[in-house]
Image (cartoon, rainbow, N blue to C red; front, side, top):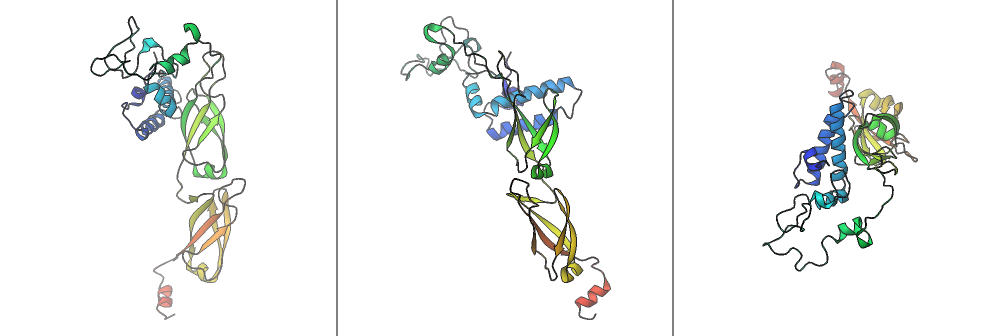
Length: 299
């Protein structure tokens, strides 16, 4: 029996796109195979959640499911399955349970502009009532949500990730990817039901924020503390970048909020961005009596 994606995600049919996405993320995070490597029940539940998201996370598929054109597995719905949420009213004589909602108990086809089942019938039957042979169909795509580090998003990386069926795949993370973008893994989705190509795995990316850097397009911004002595006399300080530490030269007479550029140390795309370091003067010892005398002009 096909699943009900709304029930799987625990949301009502009236749920908004944001509510559906939030429910999927919460369940996918709690059930991810990385957290339950030896729990087959959790893995099966994770698969169902991913399958439900494949339907409800796709506007076109969700609309078809809501109209009863496909079932929770993404397959075309037959007449025997009825229409989800269908109300009372006239059915087909001798039909298999398909219902058509009416108002006032009248004929549902009175005044209709064309056959309301035209789109469904057109996709299921050819001339003379014979069923079409669509040929091999591609397997369903599977959607996943993955978190990556800020550094990997900036520099690019190759990481091993665990899919819903427990398969570990090496995934190339391109430099410059951002939250909300999707990586496609060809042929890593569901197998075809009739000998076609497998579906794809779609990885929706969420980049973890950094406590050190902020992203500004291809550029990065950060604060760099320097001593009062370095600000006055100049010097060098070590600065952390996503690709490793570098030395930053601070010119003499630098002030707080002065911004220095590290060329090419931003997002590592084909044309790398820059890293902008904003200086913050920090006192080595605010209670230093010599410093106090200097400030009071007594030194």
